[in-house]
Length: 184
Image (cartoon, rainbow, N blue to C red; front, side, top):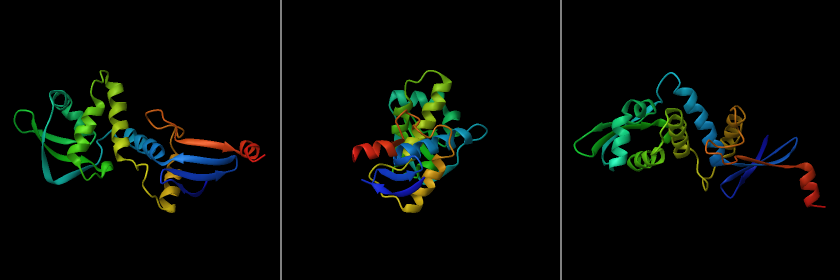
């Protein structure tokens, strides 16, 4: 695909031999990150970023249960958290992929996103999808031409490029015949 530009700071517009393509930048980046996370965590843990100023967090009962029951798995995905009294924890590191300015909110939102998942395989899918979602480029963010090209190239190398891990479409194609029909 040849990147033409960005529309509404949300969609990448590209052309290819079969017509025009609109790529949802968030859904596409989410798929790319999800694939990277699932490949990375098969044998090792995600790269972590230690916090210069570890954060004290108060967790709900449900969030605390997840942390206590799945500490090793949380660390495998880049979250380093230690107990610090009743319902209080210290967040020491986060997944590098997040690059967030608000690690506490990211962690609590992440815990809320994976709450209530019973099976291990579903849990691993949901945890990877949640990290990918929180770490991906958002709608409303301007991307440079080179960033758009890099994202399209990365998307072309994943197994399921047409949807994000949550099932939303990442690519819409308008074939040449449809375009010609619209313009009569």
